[in-house]
Image (cartoon, rainbow, N blue to C red; front, side, top):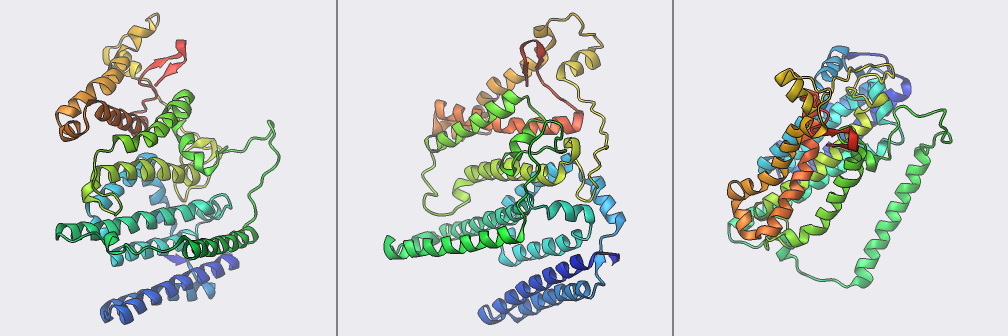
Length: 426
């Protein structure tokens, strides 16, 4: 880090930010000192609080630090779409595999503090600051932290319950079976939550300006033109699939899958309490679909997709003149031109796209029986023919998106089947 030039308001804002984080760590230290009687942990987190307080004093004195240009350029260089997506998948896999380690409160709190420390430093970059503080994007920042917390919290409870079940003890939820009346207990709780949420929304509306733009006009189109945040995942799908696939088929299968889940699920364990061991497949599949294929794509579309829908690094200025060569080719080009050196002029669409058609048929028709006889044989036996093949079909369509994304990023594959004569492309 080195001393740089920041506006006075930004220096003051970062100073207040770091002092608030320091107060959080002081509260964590007090928790260990008075509740856990652990003085070593209390000292450690007091030292962390002092570190954040030192940052706060530096910024309030307008002597704060900024990230070096070399570091920002290095991050922009390594942060490509493939790196981003693979890192998200690897992070989720590591979290599930080492869940006992990552759900320890001290470990989770440490990861949060590292993230908060780096977030403050990152705000010293003008480009990053402008993107993060945009009124449209503030809720997405909250989304990242809230999804992280509400993924950690049930997994922590699941780890505790799995340990109790392994010892022959009932889960924690079974120990709290005391019932309360809807009136007044539940109604009062809901009323208090409603008041708190209303106050929060009023403060939000006063503090942040509504992100209203000019009236829509065909002569002035925003660049980038983005859908609302909750549709950014679908908009990202349009990069890899035609509209009929990204806007109709895949969302339809998502809805059908959500409806079919209760009828497909054969596991009677894990009802009414948190557990991972007893429902590892269901939990892993849900987290992959929701966190990786939805939240990660929302973050990608919000913070990393810039003008002309190009991918930009976290600290890379959004240059509307950035030119990215599009060398996307179809599977038929790889097979006939590059593989056999044969021109495709005059070749019928069926013969031209036969390799892609065969590949799609093998993926959709041959893969389910293969899984039923190998890796998922136990599921096939327990679920039966119909439920098993519905489950595998839903998973296959879910996996089409990451498969197509990786193929586009790595070998520039655009379409597996390309039949413009019938407006049918996959």
